[in-house]
Length: 438
Length: 74
Image 1: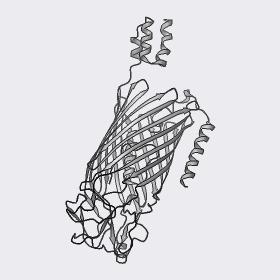
Image 2 (image 1 turned 90 degrees about the vertical axis):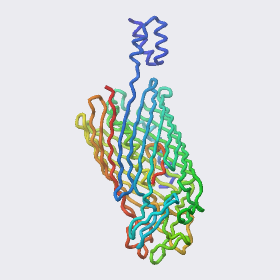
Image 3 (image 1 turned 30 degrees about the horizontal axis):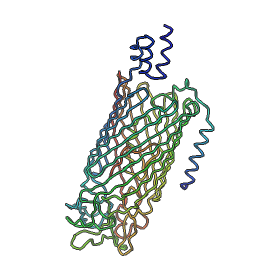
Image 4 (image 1 turned 180 degrees about the horizontal axis):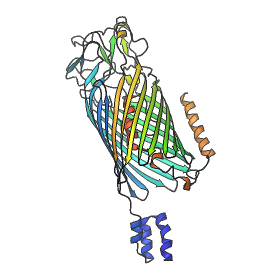
């Protein structure tokens, strides 16, 4: 009996196989130890998301599954699969006009029209995205953790491949964790009909002289973080991240309207095309983003308050502030969690709602609202409940809105009568189910 | 705040936290912090979903982690 008791610490220290061998050498039955070390089965989380913008804009239905398992003692494999189905219409960047506007679709094979005074939405938007992720997490010595991962995603016109690594080490009796992360990605965009040369005009059907082949970009992300336990009830995190993108960073589907500087009316496009003049999006081929992120989580007798703030700045002139609050009210096996998120960003230096006829073209210009000045607000509520088998299901509904401003001086002539930065309103509905183990 | 100031602030706060050490919470007092709802990322799927939505609709990204797969989001 004495020998058996002594064998138990060895199991924890050097792992099952060696312990089993030791036990065998000592003439003890190893079976009991092996059973005690049996690793739990897969943890499986699933989710269905519907993201739907009003006015017939983008709608995304997404299914996600995440599986995690302790493959070896304290070594975890994590697999994720997400499939998105996107439909709807996306703003092209062109401004409304007092007349009907005709556009050539990005493929160059067809045309669509937008009514007088209406927002220019490209209705040919349809895509399916499949994303896969895998990561392997393992302890390094007693106080460190290394995780290595890969990500792949594929859309009709876009592919992404990435690798990432994260190293974390505990200090101060595990009250402090320092972590360092690195991610490398290569993304390729290959639109049907080619990638337009920046600032060249939209051409008529079948004309592709300003189109090139697929384009790519490389993205490198660094992350440096500190997580600190402040008390038995409070934990905080502070992260600094740096992201560097190089390559093709324009959006091949976005254009800018070239308007008369006095009347604000559209100007004539290429001869014989029957189109007004719309120039393709042009952005610098490098971008550096930096952000500082802080998170506080505090327990209040079983309830949890989570507050986070992020400041981001980039070398395109965008500065942003993001403040998020969540409060989880626990009622035994159930909880209710309100969520609010405030977001504010400044416009990129080269954001232009329109370009004016007769003035020299800038080198870079975009009318993509996402690079404009706007405020975002999200309000949501989540309900969750434990299942009898030790899992959990939850449902959340959130409302997201963006209210923005056109670039200064854009509302000339007839444009003063149009909404040059229409609000974006979207509903996010998500149902999640975490399978139990019992 | 410019880029170099930002870097200095991060390093300074990081060093202060590590050196200062704060009031240590002993392993046997970790019951609350060990709860799933007290983890830094308590719902990974929801976190990834939000990151993907806001990355697609805003000019910002980053903060807590890396995007798990780029997109040509319109």
